[in-house]
Image (cartoon, rainbow, N blue to C red):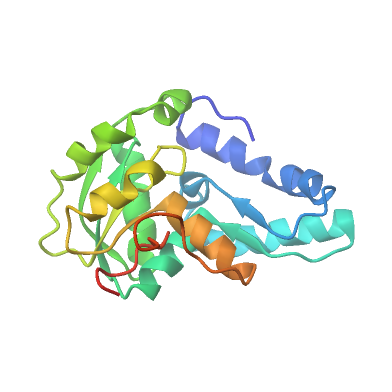
Length: 212
């Protein structure tokens, strides 16, 4: 699903390609599919991940004759935060401020309040993917997490986060998650695999509460 600039128009065009992509991927007889773009889902309006996941599963089934689960980063992040019992979050996002506001509104509709956010305002999609994860460690510490139950270190799958997720967690006493880690965790759970990533003491991709 091509996208050069993270704008509402290109996100819509990208999402329009999702059914085609699901049908094409089904030819590989995969066990699960993950729609790994949070903003492409959330920019389409509240609750869209429910509809999208059903439509993609139907498109894949129509092509291959087999039903398989579909995970979306938007849905995975929401379910991960609910699993952590985190109704209030602080988030770091690469988006322009209006798009970050869409994410905040989407989460609010799902019963999750964003108490603080930082928008990096990077519109070029390739540039987002080239952001230095180490630099994000310092940026995220500017967030006000005093009222937050969890920290979303990256609300964008494209923005690198997994390599420094554990390092960020060491700086906070609340769970630290990302759209990417939530997607990984939910995908593993759907496949009945243990949702644990390699690391010190087996760090969970969804960001289990410290000591939990």
